Amino acid sequence: MNIIDTIKSFINKIFSPPIEVLDLAIEKLSEVQMISAQGINIGQYLSVLGDLPTSWQVTVSSLLLSVVLLGSLLIFRSLMRMYFSVKEGVKWW
Image (cartoon, rainbow, N blue to C red; front, side, top):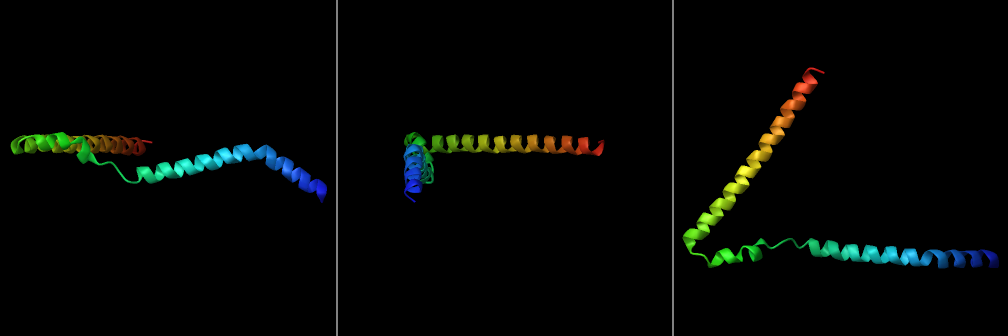
């Protein structure tokens, strides 16, 4: 039994530093996950627009909304093109 305990302690001494590094990495990754779970406050980046007059705020918000709408339509068009090309490929396969 004494030899087995000696072997176990020797193996633990060898693998102790990598295990400690992995435990530290797991701890740091869990902290990062908690920080990123809070989300991004876009209001901090757009607070400059709050100083503009109301008409300019409406104009900028309309421009941003139209960019988002056009981007989503572009993505939808790309997806539909891909769908139809796959559909044609399967049809003649």
